[in-house]
Image (cartoon, rainbow, N blue to C red):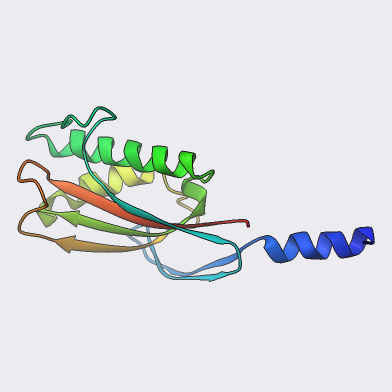
Length: 141
């Protein structure tokens, strides 16, 4: 295969991602993705690698652990927060949103933030949990 053709094939394997309508609160209204490998990351909660709760009664500690867990899942899949195109947040109290934003901003690409959804819930699957996040990421094939 000619060198130019090889470059074209490689370019086709690279995802094309456009972040549209960036909102002032640090997320994108629309993220368009063409090509690439899509990762669906299950809800991450404030348990450490041994399954122990981190931050009992401490929302900030739980959010930090959740994002650390999400980073670990991305790392395991050969991805990073730069590849995240969508985040879904589940929390008990919308009054804690600024804490979520502050921790999120330490991880995500703030120039091209992922699309995001916030859902206030009555309870997560364990009553001591205060926050959960799941994600969609796109990487090259």
